[in-house]
Length: 157
Picture 1 (cartoon, helix red, strand yellow):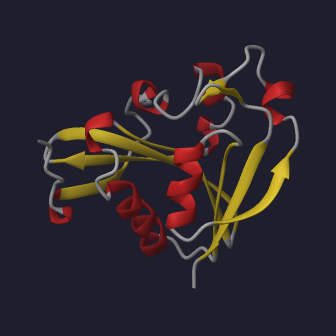
Picture 2 (picture 1 turned 180 degrees about the horizontal axis):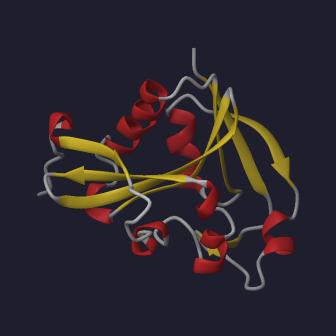
């Protein structure tokens, strides 16, 4: 049985510019390297670690002085549903002076939608046909082809 790690053992550290981009982890939450490359060079990348083991990644892009967008948040499977994802959202809220956090996900990405809504995000808009217009290959989640992109927003006091 898996036991969730103590939050006190977790680290949320910024990747240095000279460190390799962790594509293996980013691919857990995005479909392809070209898709990741469309945003990653505009992002700050944070590694989620327990001791020396990197268990996840969070890529954020500053939209303006008041807003951040989570472009990618991924944990290796063994650490999902353990509270670490929520802890990462709390780290973003604590470390940045942003008033808003944004995230976008697919219309059939039910687990991601539930996760973000449980963590205080509200649906704010829909980009119709986003996945049909921007990806050459059809993307399926939960047996359903992704079509629209759902945008969510959280106000951070």
